[in-house]
Amino acid sequence: MTAEVHVDIQLASDSPVLPSEDDLHKWAAAAVGQHRDEAEISLRIVDIEEGAELNQQWRQKEGPTNVLSFPSDLPEELNLPLLGDLVICAPVVEREAQEQDKELQAHWAHMMVHGTLHLLGYDHIEEDEAEAMESLETKILQNLGFPDPYQSEKNGS
Image (tube, rainbow, N blue to C red):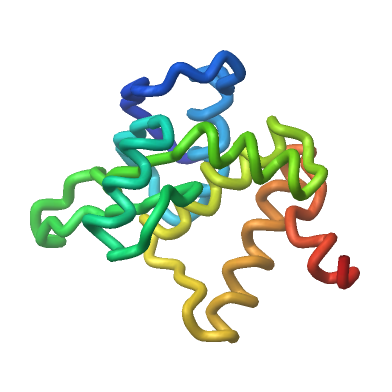
C-alpha cells in the first residue's frame, strides 16, 4: 500500500536547476511509506537570504541550512493528514551536492526524504537515533534508485 501524499510547493528561489514537482511528490511519498495512509506537506523552496533568516529565527544558527522541518502540532484527535512544513534552501543543496561530489538530483531526493522523516518524528540528535534515521534514509533512497547518501562518510572520505 502506497501512501497518498500531497505536497503544496511554494517557490521562492531563482535557482534554474530545481527538481520537478512530480519528483518532489514521489520522494515525499517514499519517505511517508508505510507510516501513514495519507499526508500533506507544505514545501517552500528558498534562496540564501530567506534560508539564513529562518535558520536564525528557528534554530539560532547563522547562515542558511539545507532543510528545515516544522512538524505539525495538531492534536491527534483531529485526525488530519497534515505532517508539517519543510523549507529547503536551493543554493545550499546545490553547493553541498558539488562539494560532496553527489548528483544534484540524488541530493535533492535526500533532502526531501530527510526532511519528511523529521516531520514523521525521526531525529538524529542521539547516536542511536541518527543510525536508525540514516539507515531508513539509505533504504528509501536506494529503493528510489539513488546511492547511499552517507557512503562517503562511511568510507572516511
